[in-house]
Image (cartoon, rainbow, N blue to C red; front, top):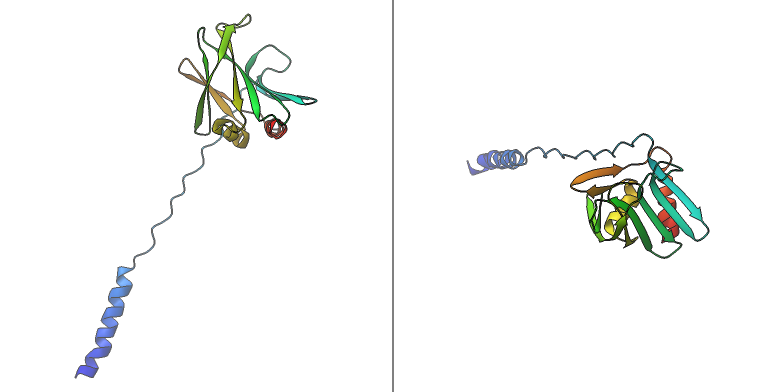
Amino acid sequence: MRILWLPVLAMAALETACASVGAPEPVVVAAASPAPAPVAGYDWHYTPDGDIARLAYGVEASDDLRLGLDCTAGSGKVDLTALGQTGDREISLESGGETERFAAEGEPSQLHDGDILTATAATSDPVLQRFRRVGWIAQWVDGKREVYAPHSGSEAGVERFFALCG
C-alpha cells in the first residue's frame, strides 16, 4: 500500500510547488517625459571665436538675451549671464530634474526691467551636465519657470560648447 501512495504524494507535492509560483508581475516602465517645446523666435546660438565661445538663448542678432554662457577653451568654467528681478543675487537653473543656485552679482539693466545677473559655474555642475545631455535648461525668476529649449538643429551647439569648455 505504501508504494501506491508514493506516486500520488509526489504528484501532489509537484502540483503544490507549481501552484505557489505565480505569473511574474508585469514590469512597468515609466515613459520618459518629453522635452519642452521650443519657443518661436527664441533659440540657442553657439558662437565660437578662437579659444572662447558663447552659447546664448535669445533672439538671434538682437539684445534679447535670456541666458548666456561664456567660456574659455578647456577651462571647465562657465560665466553665466541672466536677467533677474531688481535686487536678485542668484541665478536659479533647472534641467531634467537637476537644480542649482549660483550666487550672482547684479546691476540694473538698461534694456529690461530688473537686473542683469552674472555668476560663474563649473561645467561639471550637475545641472549643466544634465543640460548638456538633454539640450534644454530652465531659469526660475520670481517663482516663475522659463524654459529655454532648442529648435531642431541647434541642440548640436550645446554639445560643441561643452566639448570646447572642458
